[in-house]
Image (cartoon, rainbow, N blue to C red; front, side, top):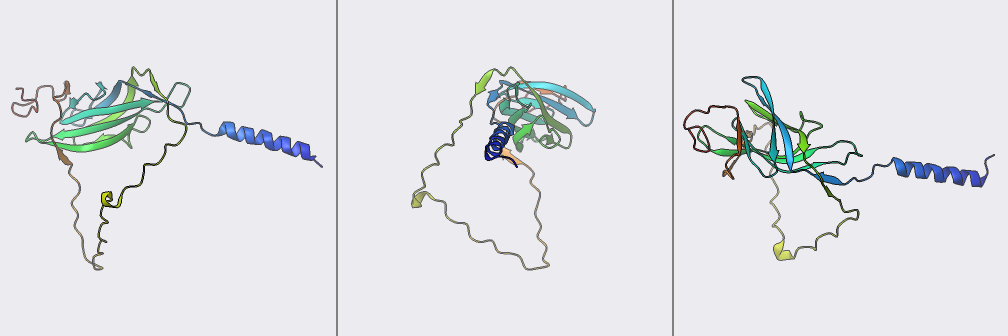
Length: 201
């Protein structure tokens, strides 16, 4: 029959092993450049292009602007993410936001931009040396809002009668104003006159 001392020693060893096996919250590295891949579905060409943070690059009818690009240290599992905004330039030189969100290099099929003609996804990063230490302690919650600052409650939605059809149009993108002129352009290499968003011929 095992002694009490042996049971306590085994419990301590197993508890230490579980603590070591638990994933630690790793710090992140901020990168100055995100690397994307783009597919032109008409020609079948795939190109890779680098975009600096807060720089806008045009790929066909899409303008890509990464806002931040993170990676993990080399001692951790590789994880490259980028918060990216993608605008589509229409034939009438109108800009529509078609994507705003995180892209993950480890799963490009789930978190890329799928367009009728052009697809864009995150593949890598360049030049990251700035280590950003995540806070280990939770931050204090913000103070509660005063009653006059709270949002008014939304009225309850009415449910439609049964067997009645509801038509909902799919989202077509949000109109936005152009923020800056793209620093680089890819596809088409020779845009038609009057279709160049920057006004060139």
